[in-house]
Length: 387
Image (cartoon, rainbow, N blue to C red; front, side, top):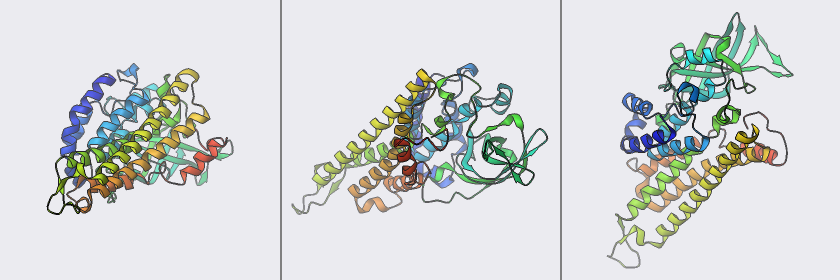
């Protein structure tokens, strides 16, 4: 499947996803038949290398597809964004190990991003233990990841003056999924905790984190920061969906008119509604332009020089943070525009606002990240290679 094929398949599948949003939220995971449809649409193979027959899609191409899915349902967009990292991570492992873990181009991945748990070094590999939170997509994934500090017995291992950590890859069946994902929003992402108890992971199924090196060429795999470079697509798709809902409603629904009693107006005739739609389009348009401009700069620099400049890394991190904030701001503005009817569970705007608030708690979207971004903008080196 080419990038164009995968984009076309996403557009074709979007109406069904949109119609099943409540079902997805109630299930708190992707329904099995929808998961199979996403695999058939190539949603999880976007980062798979061309050497394996994958499309090895550019950063822009991936993000545009994620945006399509998130516009239909943010939880689906989130699962696609996370699950498609399979191809990226496969390219940080030796070929034989990667093929063993990912025998199918449509295998997806899950796992949290925090260095929690323990990787105790043992003969031939590591014993992984711990409870890992926020494992988005774990109900659907074939492979589970964990970022673990390395221990030599009870002692924390140190390399070059810093704690040693590894990214580990395990089969989903090797861990226990904990039904912990009862949240404000993004319910369908199924971002449950999981528990690993002395799971043996061979040494060729790990790489040093975040200091691993790609084992294959290509701009998609050259920089560790690529694992979060396409996140913009989820909040951008959510914001677009919020505006579309109100625009459709504005042409169909009437509201009481306080100045001409007895003559309800179409919402689109009310100045407040028109002003809010304009404001929302401006917010989304500006954020989207900044996001894709930052992505394109990073991609072009990696293609040319092998890595992005500090200035471009700042722009990518800042635009990602802005995308999450704009998604929340636009969703809230559209709720305000519709008014009291938007507070009911039957309103799609109500669930979109909850989704926007929930995804805004991801560490890349929290206010505390601005300190790091600002420090980088002032010339400080990023605290880790993926920023």
